[in-house]
Every structure is written in C-alpha cells, then in structure tokens.
Length: 379
Image 1 (cartoon, rainbow, N blue to C red):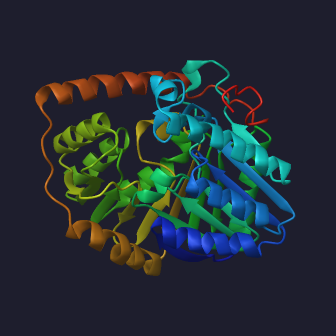
Image 2 (image 1 turned 30 degrees about the horizontal axis):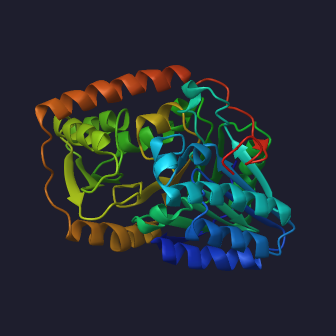
C-alpha cells in the first residue's frame, strides 16, 4: 500500500509530547483514539483521561492492555505491597475508577489480551502506544503514568490522512480482537503493525536495513536483547560502527547485565547514559530512522503487538541526532562489566524466558473486552 508524503515532528520529553497531543485531541472533530500498555490513575493518566472526556470528537475510544490491571507503578497488584501500602492501594483503585468514569462520560474503553487467570499468557501483551486525532497520529514509547512520563522518551507526530487512517484501522481491528500484521508505505514512511504472532516476518525490513548498512548504526534502547544483538553483531563484524546507548539507572538490572555482556561478546560498543531512558530507536547510516514501540528485545520479537516505523527522512534523522543523540552522548560513560555470576544468571534466565515466550508467542490473542472493573473487587 503506497500513498502521500506524511509530515513529521519529533517530540522528545513527555511535556513536549503531551502539550502537542493535548492540543490535537482538543481540536479533533471526528476521532480521538488512544492506546497504551500502561494507563494509570495518577496525575498523568488523569490528565489524559480528562483530555479524552473534553475532546469534541464524535468517536472517542481507549484501548489499554490488561497489563495495567496486573502492574501499577512498576509493582504487581497481587503482591504484599497492595496489603501494606495504602498509597499503592489507592492508586490501584483510582485506576479502575478512572476508566469507570470515562465510560460514564461516553468514552469507549476496552482492554486487550485479558489474562483470565492464566499466567502463561502474561507475555502476550499489546505493547503499542498510539494517539489518533483526526488526521494526526502519534507513535513511540510513552505510556500514560507518572513514572513513565518522568523517564526520558519520545513520540513521533505523523500528520497525514493515509497514515492516520492506517493506524486507526489497526486500532479498530484490535478493538474487535482481530489484530493482524499490516504494512503501509506512504512517501518516505514504511509503517508496520505487528500482531505478536508473526513478528518474525514483521521485523524483516529492519533486519534487511541493518544488513545493508554501510557506515554506522546507533541504537537507543534500555532492554536490547536477542535476536537484535545478533544482527547488530553481524554488522559490527562487517566493519560497521555499531553503538548502543542504554541507561545506567536501568529499572531492569537483569536485562542490563545481559545486554552489557552480550554486546561485549558481539563486538558492539556500549555507552551508559546518566538518566533512565525508555526511548527506543535506531539510526542507520545517518539517514534511516527506526522507531515505534519495540524495545528491540526478545518479547518484541516473539510475542508483543508493536508498531515499527522506518522513516527515510534526512530532516528527521538530523533532528534525532541533535535532540536525542547529542544530549545522550554528552553525559554517557563507558560500560561496567557485570560479575561472572550475574552474567551467567542473566544468560540462563533470559534464555529460559525466551524459550517460553517463543513457545507461546504464536498463540491466539485474547479478544478485547469491555468493563475494566467488571471482575475487579479492588475497585
């Protein structure tokens, strides 16, 4: 599918992104669609909910993954913290109450991939982040919660009817519980909606771009893992300069230990940034910018529903260099080497998780469901 040339705006930082997105939602007349993995009833989530309630769009809907019923503020809901921490308990209840109020105000709400008591499908998550406001769309890494908005991250604003229609169509398919692998070529944009079952096919354009690199590849990701490190390592062995920027204060130390050891084995240079960054992107040969919701890790490859955009725009590549890479490199330091037992533990546990997720990844997704709080006795 081919079409017109979209217009882009790179929005680095949650405040910059939300100021722009809130304005677009307020101006939307036909559709205001929001999707996220995490959407919590804290100040950030409530601000997004309020913007959706105020939007004059005729079609106002929200998709949020069942992850938010399981994990709030980076803690499992069904954990001792729920019993011992009144503030945490209040936030869990506020999240359910927020979605109840949204539906009462006429905003449609559905959850994706409900767990339904089966822990084996925990890894089958919808990891997409999306806003569609009429003919404008946003994709990237930002979830709607205070701790996500506090992290370094970015979103891409895409202005263009065809791209917005394509993403709205994927939203509708997900709303109906029937998301599938889809691809759009529109001007210099190649955009894929990955369904979690056939992501090996969906990532082929990215791997081909890595294999065609002639000068250099820069990767920004907190959770980079196989099979992406394997392809980057092959590029490094061809003489391509491969650089990875990843946060020193990583919220997943096990993954960090794996990343550092695996990149060292692959001959991939790593630098550690001073702040927690949730941003994920690749810049290939200073001209092709790759971004979306994927962390370039094994869950993204085997089981997560994702957005993946490849944009061949010199102007956008320059903006990414100036607004993301230059500031991140300025405060970056050389990597530390994890202890041998940490390396062994990370290899074993990440490998085991990869085998499990690979096995269940092709399972059918759970259908989207109404009633965020319907079976939630904590609400």
